[in-house]
Image (cartoon, rainbow over all chains, first blue to last red; front, side, top):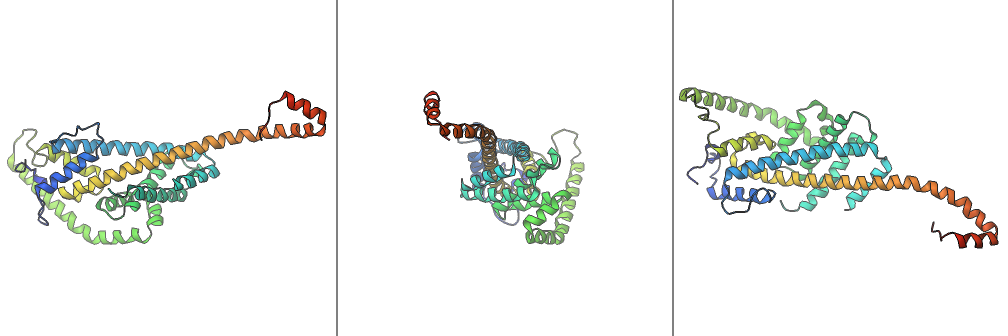
Length: 93
Length: 221
């Protein structure tokens, strides 16, 4: 696997990045992804991890977008006093 | 990412500040404008709560490209907003020319190979290469990162995004709950007003009171 490292992944002139470091990051990334997507087997290809990561980030972006819309609707229709009460309560959580 | 709880709290505080700044609660402006304002507050809050990382700087940079975001960013970031821009101006020249050189070299090597096969592009050879390019576009500031930094920043960025979603969700739940409470509170006072005169008339006559109490269930006001 180390010999087939893609061109853009070869270490820059600045520092020597070892294969081990890169593999370590890839496995950490795999751990962050929602478990349903990837089975936690030993050898999941880097390409798969990257693809799942991209999908994950995209879905999170969509969630933020959706939540922003719903929050803006909610804030517009809520009276300011109860909104402030909710804000205080949120801060105390 | 360690210390998620403290990040979440910092994010929430910063976001609420941002929401108040943009005065979304007033209900003015179109839905799209209000949504953009909330999203802006959320993104700035995330970057501020995280601190100095490549992706946070990339995020602020891309947000500041939009004209309508500038005054908000100026207000929230203050001096911080000014400084990076100044540094960028001097260092922008170098990356730009590097990119041009890189791009022209790629173009030249493409022409050299001169093969019409669909997948023989120098740029996106392996699958990992392709996916890396996609990831670079998704992570703010990713275009100028080397592979190692990209992976590292992606880890951090994904964790922060997750926390951002969680906190926004919690905020919404709390707001919804308080709204329900406020709505039901709005109904109850009317009932109270009805009851008060009745209570007054009960105490006027003892006979009437005993009689009425026996008929009606006990009231708790």
